Image (cartoon, rainbow, N blue to C red):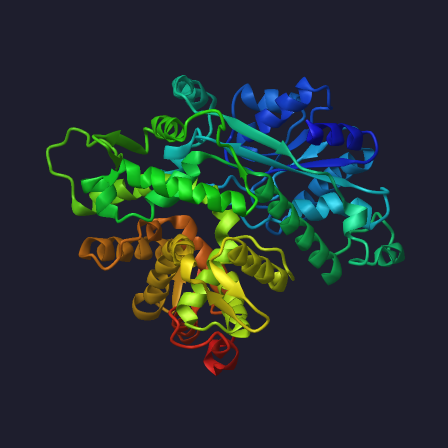
Length: 554
């Protein structure tokens, strides 16, 4: 209620921008409903153009204040100018809050996505040009015990095309609502004053040198400020998220061997014992945990498993992964199809693990650096930590320019939970902290294994020039072969989001460049640079070699 009270006050003083995370199609309906219930102006919502094509539904959204935008604007300057002016007019007048998703897309992995900056630039420009005194950003954290689209998201990650949004499909999906999806938690964060946050970061006087009506390309200073603010909003969204008991159980389930989940079953008392241990660790890290205090712990965890019966089931004191039922068919299921069915269940489980990943990711990266470098020197660990943050920059969102601060915070968490001793020169694992360090490393290991598979493909099997579509199909084929041969046990390597994130990271590291001449989404691969990155990730060479290898161009 405190967040809503602050929001209500802010709407009377400055233009307000509502910035929820985006995990489900229900997100924008929920925000409007809550604001209407508490007599706060219903927001104007930036929605995807596909929703406008839905009969009746699109018109209802439009009359409710939504406006529809293209997913990609490209080089259409007229469209950009019209959209930009429309958004800035809403901000300048401030007659209603405006709502948009800073991540740009719905997260298919339930992790926070790297923010898109186009809409953020439009929203902040009236402040940069002194057309408004201040703008208030309100981060909103929406958490689900169970996501409505869990199965759909897993199939999309495995390459199944996303079904088109239609009114007919909406009506057909109403039977899904007959199931139990648990609770939804909506946390309205403390309002952020753009004026206060931008103080000392941007010189607004430069905008007075050009007439306001003329379009201006954002300066590097403005771009850096917008990027910093957008990443800060995502961080606040993460910190405001509520973690469910099921998310902790998913963390522990995914650290068990895959055969234990699919064949032997994981002992219930082992799972519950580890989950209770993890609960203490989460609370030590200061996270928001929805664990009913008046209910016995065993009942809380049994209820979580019952709610997620589409992912796991309990039988004879053991927990098993639920796999899709085999339809009636003449021919037996192929090994490749069996891998995909297991992968679908694993990716659903991983999405719920991802809901609590933001709590552990920075300490986990330090724990990983300790293991791979086999060093305790702070400067060496920090260098490897920076490398991991750069490589996984599209997996785990970090605030630009705050790597050192994040590293210190991670070390502080390790010290607080008794996993490491911290001095000015060293980070030393403690005798009683090995269980914590092993858990943290295991959280990051699926991402490392997945990236190693993709780097291996680019170095050994991939062409020097390839399209994104070719890359995704080839990596999925390679990962499937490695899983069947027993060389790989990480089904998350089959996720298209993970594969795309690596390509984006390699472009950022200049190991892969996008071909401008080609009409297709073609990439030129610098195999020497990719090989160097793989060697650093496996600990063969220090991250400093990325700067000294001539062929790497990093």
